[in-house]
Length: 365
Ligand SMILES: NC(=O)c1ccc[n+]([C@@H]2O[C@H](COP(=O)([O-])OP(=O)(O)OC[C@H]3O[C@@H](n4cnc5c(N)ncnc54)[C@H](O)[C@@H]3O)[C@@H](O)[C@H]2O)c1
Ligand SMILES: [Zn+2]
Ligand SMILES: [Zn+2]
Image 1 (cartoon, rainbow, N blue to C red):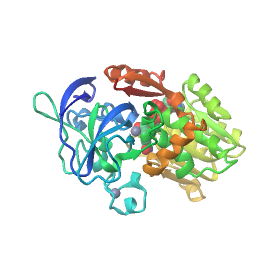
Image 2 (image 1 turned 45 degrees about the vertical axis):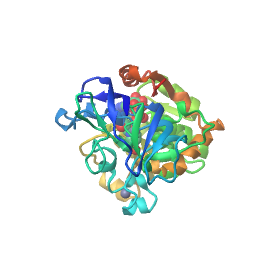
Image 3 (image 1 turned 120 degrees about the horizontal axis):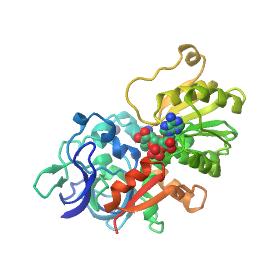
């Protein structure tokens, strides 16, 4: 079978639309015809890594939504014709998978970011017969048709509009899940959200779902801070990191109960930590490299810092739940979406980088 796909051939190069050959699904895989796929910063990770870290031509995309075309011999839970959203892959057998916490699968990098299946094979071949990486987050959904791992697949109500559901597979579930699942923010609590992009804005929307009290949004773009107020921020800060902590303590009257970082900027993260109250909790989801330090005494005095992957989501339950909230108008994450045909994927990336678009979604008409 052949498919149209956006291939990244070098770390800094553009995405190129190519026709690739697609393998048959293995017993625990499916073929999905994508309707729409969100673009998340993690699709652009090669841009931020040293060029030698680039693992070769690859198809990224990990917020797919589409229709199941075919299923492998052992797939029981999903059938051809089902409407699905695609999320993270996981091994299913390690201790954290057994505890229904698949984002923290012991095999997370191998199952999601190794450029192929866990056994090292790939499902895509290019016109010259060369390997192109597949199975990014079990799905490589920047392709019209893709071979997908069964554990990445989440069945959704066929009555819903698939064109907007893809981002639930990563960015939106991470932001909302951070508030609802990871930090378990209570009614009336004060929350600081660092970065008002796709993750941050869905986190802010989720603070409204739990009835949080003071909600402070931090960003550099005035337009995003304005939008943050529409979705639940009671205060906004657009300042230098060295005055952020002071402003947070002032607004909250002594420090925030919770802070959630999506900027991945160490200076912002530290300021948010310093803006916590004595027993406050900081959740970190923004990705960066290197080391991060926190003050020893304030830490042992009662604060908590924790890493958050995918908002502690169990995708097969949490994604349909968020889709239902959206359908009822209580979680309007689709307001953040701007669609581009897959052929305009490079424009979509530029529009996200400039701050003009919060969540690009690529369509396959
Ligand atoms: N942990 C996870 O499971 C997970 C999942 C998805 C994405 N991510 C990561 O989360 C991060 C955010 O993703 P996103 O899609 O929301 O990106 P985004 O670009 O939409 O949002 C990031 C926001 O942070 C703001 N920002 C950046 N630097 C800032 C600074 N110094 N001060 C204030 N604001 C600043 C930007 O203006 C932007 O609005 C990325 O690093 C991404 O790779 C993590
Ligand atoms: Zn596992
Ligand atoms: Zn992502």
